[in-house]
Structures are given as C-alpha cells and as structure tokens.
Length: 265
Length: 265
DNA sequence: AGCAGCAACATTGGATACAATCAATATGGT
DNA sequence: ACCATATTGATTGTATCCAATGTTGCTGCT
Image (cartoon, rainbow over all chains, first blue to last red; front, side, top):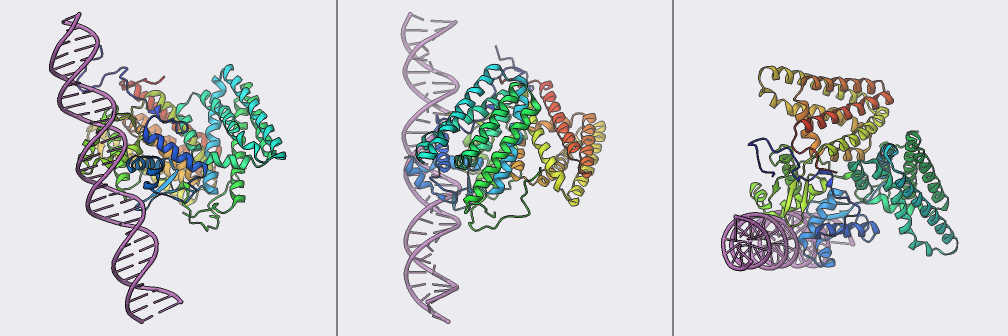
C-alpha cells in the first residue's frame, strides 16, 4: 500500500529509512561483521596495552594474527583512525596514539559537561526502576571497592579479577543516567569520548589508591541522592564535580607515570 | 575554579609520540590522501543532496565516478560509516542515513551544551584579535543576510551563490569561539556533530525565511556583545539560546517538509 | 672513522580477480 | 491465479597481485 509515488516529492510516511541515531555504539559493538569485529579486537588490544602507544601496526602482521587478508584489516584501521585510536601516516601505516595530559584534560572537561547535561535531563524522566538499578550498581560498586582495598593490603594480585566488575558497575551507574536522559546522540558522543584512553587510564589511576576509590564511591552516593530527590541542580553539580575530579586524577596519574606524558605534535 | 590551563606550558617533550588530539578535523580535511579525499567528496555530495537519504551507494559506481578502484572507495565508506553519515548493511552495501526529528533535536541539544561550554571557556582567554575576527564575521554575516533577503524579493535565483558565504561567515563566527575555548577535543566533537545533517538542514531551514535570518543575526549580536564584555554567564546563555533556537527551526523545517519525519522510536 | 650516496628490502597503496551473498525474476506445482 | 521454489544476475566481501614509496644497511670516498 506504499506505492503511490508522487513525482518529485518523496513520500511522506514511514519509509523504513534508517535513523541517524542508529549509529554504532562504539563501545560494545559485538562482532557480527568481520571488519567491525577486527576493529573491536584491535582497539581492545590497544587498550589492553598489547600494542603500546607509538607502536606501528603493520597490516601484514595483523592479518596473520587474525587469519585474514590485509583488506579487511585496512578497513578496520580506517575506522580506528576516525575513532581517534590510531593515526594514519601517508606511506608509513598506522601508529597507536598516545594520550597526553592536555588531551585527557580536554576530554574530561567535555565529558563532565555532557554527563552533566545527561543527568539534568535524566532527573526529569528517570523512573523508579532506573533509580533502583542505580542503587544496585552503587551497592556493587561500594562492595567491590571494599574488596579491592582489602585485597590490596594482603595480596596485590587478588584484586585483578575484580577490576572488570568494578568497571562494569561503574558503567552501569553512569549508563542508567545516560539512558534516562533520553538523548541517544548524547549517549553516542559520550561513548565515543570514552573510547581509547579514558577507560584504561581511569582504571590504572583509581585502582592505585584506596582513598580515591572511596572518594569515588562517596561522589556516586551524592549523585544518587540528588537524582533520587529529583534535584536537577544538585545532581548536575555532583556529576560534573565527579567527572572533573576523575579527570584530575587521570591527569595526575598520567603525569606521575611520566614518560609518555607530553607529546608535541 | 577554572583551573585547567594548557597552552602556556606545552610541556617538555621527549618522546615524539603523536597526540590524540591530532585527530582529523572532519570538516575541512583537505585532500592530501586519497581515501580522506574520497570520504570528503562523497560526504560533500551527500550533504549537497546528490545522494539523497536512503539511497544506496554502490561501490562500483562511486569507483567509476572518481576514477579509482573499489578499494579506496570501500575504505572511505568505512570512515563515513564511523562518522555516522552512512549505514553499512551486511551484504547490501551502504545507504545514506536520514535525519529524523528526534535525531535533530538530540543533536542540537548536545551541540547547544557544547558550544555553551566553549564560549564560557573562551570568555576567559579570548584575545582582542579574535574578538575582532568575530566582529568582521558578524558584519559579513549581516550583510549577506541583507543581500539574501533583498534578492529573495526580486529573484529567487540570485541568492544561491551567496549561500556559501553565509555558511562560511557563520562558521567563522562559531569557529573563533571554539578555537578560543582552547579545548581541541571540544572542537573535534562539535565538528563531528555538525557533519552530516546539521549543516544542510540549517541551510535549507534558515534561508527560507527572512525574519528568522534576521533573528539569527540578532542572536549573534547578543553573543558578540556578551563575549566582548567577557561576561561568561550571559555569553553562555546567549549561545545556548541561539543554538537551541536554530535546532527548533531545523526540526520545524524538517517536519513541515514532511517526508521522513519520525522513523525512530 | 664518519658521512654521502646507493642499492636491496620491507611495507603500504591501489587495482584486479575470484568467491560468497543477496535481489529479482522466472518456473512449476497446487 | 497464486504461492513456493529454483535459477540467474548484480553487488558486496576477501584475497592476491603489482606498483610506488620508505627504510635500512652496505659500499666507497674523503
């Protein structure tokens, strides 16, 4: 019943046109297509440090590693290039980008603003069920932090297997807020921002210091409290503070880590 | 409070590591490399409407059109996919994404927030020279609007050649603010946001109505005034209002245009 | 010994070839 | 006539090939 085309004016209706916001969610694009899968796997290895910043990614090596030809590898690299994970130099191939302090600062400043926007939108429409999810995430989060801190004091190795849970509950907490904002584009932009360095740096930075981890928990608590009361102003303030503080920590960690801190251009 | 400082101390650099913020500037990446050039040219044609939303982009056709093989075309398409300009369907190739009203709303909401952040940062460090550039851009902008409105009344065709100037002076105006913010990542995110639909929709939406164009000029005036006085609060307010208003216009135009109204949700 | 220039090698860039998959039409059965 | 199925054609996906470019190590000269 859809055919009845008017000559030049396209039909008004429900043409199944794809929406712009159908964009790939950058973070968890599971592999159904080879190139996407390769891009994910390569960037995962970069995040994991297997391909350290500054190292060259040779197409042939990657191709062999993943048992494919160079063609899909090259396409995946082109995608990583756009995502800002690698840099593509004319006839020299791709090199892994190194985050430096100014970059981190910039990214966190933007992220703080965006998550601030997200929560101020979320406050209005968040459901009780969503708040409950945040509570649960927060509970897990606090618990894991306790575990980590306790583990640190005795055995430095034990905590490593809890780190993924730490990351996950943190993501859940922030994820609910972003989801509740109802702005899909906002979600995508924040996820893009995450990609690459934010994640692994935070991880290293925070899990090094028990006090800071507890500080983090307290900040989440404040956010949760504000959003429960549907207090947009306070919620936003708490969220931006939380993110900016995390940014400071990341920068601090990066600089104390030294070495790959500052690259010119 | 605004403690994040950067440009003054670029930090001593030993490792020649590339910076993350060296990211491609999405908008004006001139063609030094084939794939980048192709991506630009293809997205330009999409923006121009030559490849309308929903249409399929066949690799062979593109290859012939640009006199290259399919290989670089495919890589360019992979990039456009990440940029959100097209959607890649498993064995069916690429189709041009169609912006719908919710997408536009979301994007403008984010953009308003980000340009708000940009100007509130810019207020502090903007130089007199930069303000002067904004003044000049604003002057050109107003002039062109006058021309366009005058042209509209007599001949509907004359104004077409002025539209690029309109766009350019507008970009210059906003560009200075973003540049003055000193946050490179912010610049990149905003540019990414622009890409695809923002631009062509605004163009169509605004150039249709003289009153709204003048409104636009007035808003720029308010922004310029606030930033000249280094009034962060007012500048931000004026900027977000300006962007949000433009977003409303874009949505309004899109919906009045009918067509691909709401596919999302 | 040190440096310039050159030659051999390694790697990327683009084109082509072939296989896999999807869309459309044709075909046969009910 | 209609629906299910098979066949064909078109298009994408991956692999391979060749050319262009960059890198490295050698040679010979000062």
